[in-house]
Length: 375
Picture: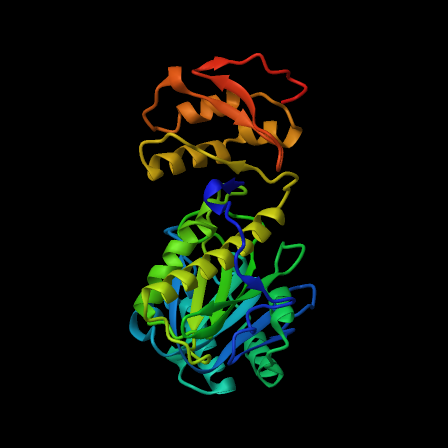
């Protein structure tokens, strides 16, 4: 389900078949390490040819996977000199205790050996089954096999390799003209289940060849995520591994250092995150309909979000949506139990098909004379 903050026009030029390696200086590789039982590629490297400033947002689930704990620590100490990300699919390395954290650190070390740099310059992401130790012999072999394959042509291969229950890869890139010149933003994501906003909703790696200080990058990422990744819900569950990383290597020679450039870059990042978030929603486990919830007239944006979240996660509302049943009382019920103070005698409800005219169902707390067949 989709919050209305996602409804914005695309204003930047999308690069056909673009992805995480579209910005200058980035390469990627995917290898089959045997972590997934399918035998398909499951080990990914995303590498910059120079140091990057970096930012990340992570799950607020208090049961956090080892890579989440390690990445928080790594960014706190080294956000201005990151070289890349190493990712495995098929095993979440979550609920694995101190051995799991040691394995995540070992992934950093192995990535540094394979592509150069120091261990603390690499971020780690894992996705898959919870509670099973990583098969480190396979991880080591996979990293070694992936390194020689690094290429800017591997955006799609990388996006495919991080898939678990996803049915299709999710990747995109766009270019934007800034006062100082052209920059490119790219990204990939995976996610289909355990999706609900809580700082992040999935795994995603975003890249850009703009030069952006780490502190500014962090603010931009949090703002963009709040309007995209944090405005979707599929099943109401937040993962142990939710992570979104943003790397900026400055290879374009364009620095974000003025208000106009910052606004244009922020809008492009919003657009990229919006597109990836919608890819996640449309590929959600069991999803047959994508619904936008628009809340107006709330006292604050936080109140509007709270009402939207309550409606979006209500099992009764979702079954009505799934069946195309205009049982609007369920929406009113969810609104009323959201915890937001409201005036029942002023409640109104409209429904609309995509690009269709809104149909008024309720005005001033009272049903209209709508036809159920229309609804």
